[in-house]
Length: 176
Image 1 (cartoon, rainbow, N blue to C red):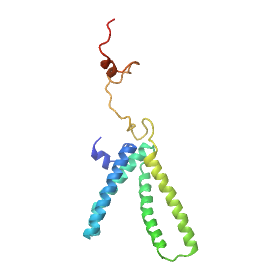
Image 2 (image 1 turned 180 degrees about the vertical axis):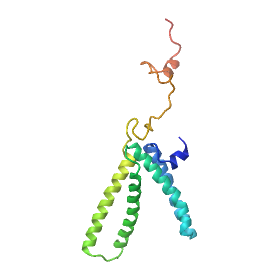
Image 3 (image 1 turned 120 degrees about the horizontal axis):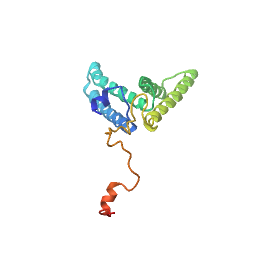
Image 4 (image 1 turned 90 degrees about the vertical axis):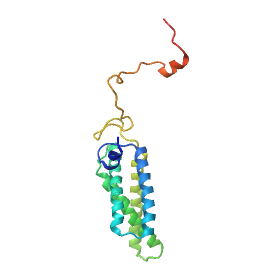
């Protein structure tokens, strides 16, 4: 499994650990670029040049993680949309908290949206980071936790008994 497949392909499955590793790397890169780009006052198109590959990678690994949970990869677009919606929502929430005057009905709708976005984001986090993938192969490929290439010789079942590494440490076997 190569890096190009991991970061850019929408086919196959990945487990929780690999997904978490890529997402943490993307978050670190985004945060670093955000600090650098804000300090240097670069143009919006230069910001998009940096953002588009990161968005693609995020969608690709999220689709593969959803495949591991036996969900269609197109749900990655919904996950992306909910995450972006939450950035806009929480930006508005901080604006309301710091003095923007709105009516009571708008406040109640805003509270309802806050609960809805929070519940959906919590489920996304549980689904992608905490729930194990489908055991064994599914319609998207083999199980990434058990994906090993076996030769016909290795496919023979192991005899029940003491493992070889323990036998070699105990000394020579008695002759019969």
